[in-house]
Length: 163
Ligand SMILES: [Zn+2]
Image 1 (cartoon, rainbow, N blue to C red):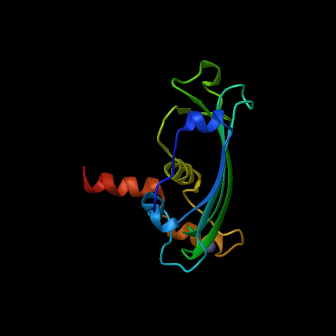
Image 2: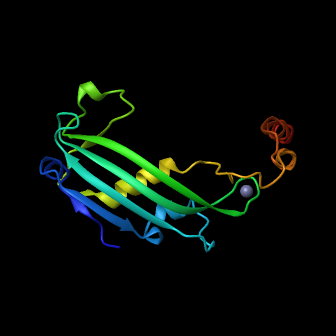
């Protein structure tokens, strides 16, 4: 899949906007977290908008709508994960001091060839929950507890094996 490269500073200054889909099967790092053998729907759609007024600095707004097949960590069956994500980035050569520690706004280094697909994939990698679970009680919790080894018991066994 052809990467989408933008000059992010110019994109913001010219207040450009793009809407694209990404082929999930082209996202190699993301595929590692997905239940790829499942026939559940999979798609990623994003909208990137440049602005100079939102923070009085060149900035980008990114929204991602993704449907991804993952493995429920309770019943170990495939489940559909729907994500609706929203990000804001200030574009600058160096991190603006005023935004340090502001969790609502991220900083992106000014780049003439920023790969938008990589940015979207990066955000999805961080947004996918480590232990996705079905919304419904797919399996009684009591069985869940039996199957999960107690980490302290495991540690005790390890210590016994390696005195
Ligand atoms: Zn489940």
